Image (cartoon, rainbow, N blue to C red; front, side, top):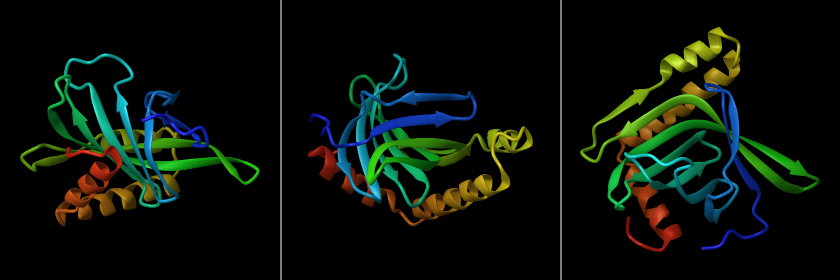
Length: 169
């Protein structure tokens, strides 16, 4: 599916390591104010993963991705706590920077899961890379995401992804 020219440019902004990368090869499959679904290949070749489908929940502060290996086999869910930074030119959204708020949740195919990188969030606060308000937002987003996981809500996310992709995942 070709990227519609009216879609904004997408970027990933990270604090650790500090970098901003345009997600120029990501394909936008579905776009609304509340939800953006993309498909993508890894930015750099990796032996463990090759591609994925991501759902950015704009108001909830997280991105949920289904990750696949080079043979198209499902590896795991990877959930990033993030904050969208929407940049406008007049009334038009020019670009969206997905600011990585460091804490992530990995969910294995067997349903086991774990939270990772919470130490990085603490380091970012200690080193004044983020402020208390940003960390508070990140913790509330993590709480909302964990409640979704506990309640079995990933199946609904998968259904939305399948609609956008046009096939079963």
